[in-house]
Amino acid sequence: MDFLKLLIVGTVVCGILDLLTARVTKKSTSSLSHFIVRTPIDFAFLGTIGMAFVIGIFLFAKHENRFIPLWVMLIFTIGLILPSALLMIAPIKYVWDIIVENDDITVIKGFIYRRHWKFSSIQYAKAGRGGLKVYVNGRKRKAFFVDTMCPASQNFIERMEKENKPIIYPQEDKAN
Image (cartoon, rainbow, N blue to C red; front, side, top):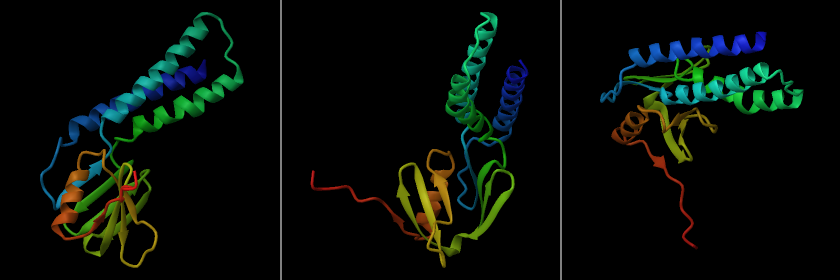
């Protein structure tokens, strides 16, 4: 019963935080020098639907006095509760942000992890499924990832084109 209360409270709190985030966040910005790439609020609604589904199943099982086996709880936790919770918190400010201010780029992950880069130090970007892997001078590994599902990601791509930074697109197999 405590687990069910925790799920309900977590869902309500994340939902309220997401609604507040949606009200504060600007819908779109046309500026190429100041913008924030953040997860869209639509992800939070998908997470809320998943959590409501799980809460409904648990309430139904409690009402019918049914026992939920441990393996089913494990599947629900790994397959639905955890991804839904992550989707619900993703649009909150500073959970996953890429902040561009003139030449400065700040990548924030999970409130804690922050990396600072310069737009002028970007060497190139590789387009792949779902986004851009951005590489900077002096690193062989990618510096950060820009998800193209995020609203301001188009600003990032336009800024790359404006500053003549190459974007490498995957080659399609022409043998077919």
